[in-house]
Image (cartoon, rainbow, N blue to C red; front, side):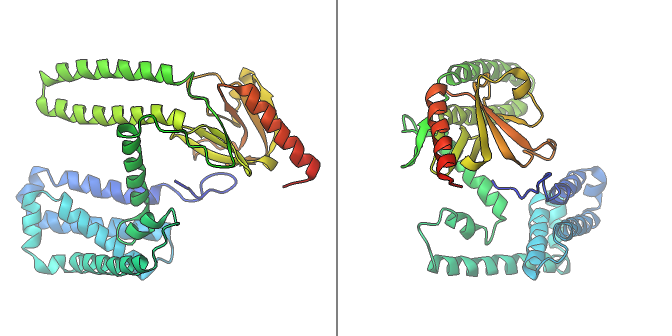
Length: 340
């Protein structure tokens, strides 16, 4: 997922994006209180107002001049949240007041109608070679970040369940370098220990509460699938030397291309101070890195909580010598020929 950043950090604040969801979730939780159950009409109206206000204020905080489609989408989202999160007594009281549900129902109808019209228009101009075609299609009705999240989850589950023995992802014109041989044994051992721990915990919790045990069973099974997908992705996503630069990958966790003109030096067997420096990005996961790429200009900070720009990337490869020779040869060739 791409995130808009500046040279010093993230441009978009997190609070306007998450505050509406937190406010709606808190209001939905309060609807379960006895006072809300005793006064369902007042609770329904109050929840509808809180949800609509939270969505509109969040929209204005993200965009000072939101378009009319964004406003309708915000009201539609508020209406869907109210209709789906209200407990049955509150929902019944809300539908008993038709005048109160006019605005959210109309907003949902307009949003979905416009989205379906746009879907038809996109299908008529379908481009099979566009990798973002499905995201753009469903984003006409559902927020694009949710569509990307659903696509990423589907890919991960497909990787964990079905892609066994597949060939590594090494596109034509690139050279791959593996790093999974030292990582997979440790992560498989972690997977086996997790299976034992989950089984024991499930049996113990089941004696106390079958409901909690069922919830833990679902959460733990999904976590195991994610871990299996991560272990398999280590072999399928090697580090690549591409015509444009070094594509640094760590399974499904990291995928970043570093242009050759940003790499000023490559160090073998970096020491602890270099790896642990605030401006270093260690992508070696569970092992100690054996290579370090020095960058100039640096990359932007990796997150909101790490303000230092990235001036070095530490990684560990199974065959660092071959990678080092090939990369240094490409860097020397580019400097001699003056390529950018």
